[in-house]
Image (cartoon, rainbow, N blue to C red):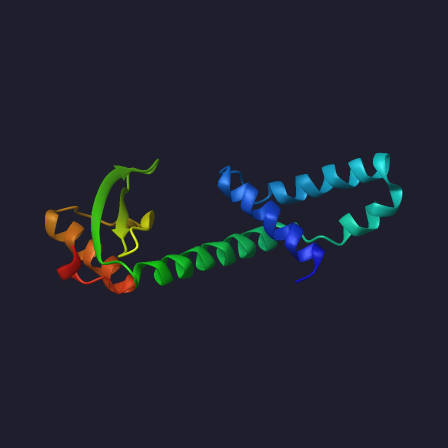
Length: 148
């Protein structure tokens, strides 16, 4: 992977981690170009070639999310036991959001605790609805109820 692509991923990750709009990538690029002009003019060309458009930041953030999900899928395969925590809250549009957390342990006593999924709950949020979403999440990660 080129230095330009790595830079783009790092800044996209920082934007997502700080809950900033993806369009901030273009602002950050402008700041980098202004700084490069003052510090080292020859580096300005390198910064001009780093992709920071809203679409690129969106794509990079999606790539990072998929990578994190794959890492979690590889870790949960080794769980000997796990627990699940559910949290329901409403977003700004009054739509119920279900957060599903997984906490697992391996035979080597390696502990993992991660947000496994966040689902928008359309309509009702009965116990059956919550169970259905939690069960689908566990199936996605290949977690068996016998290890709960």
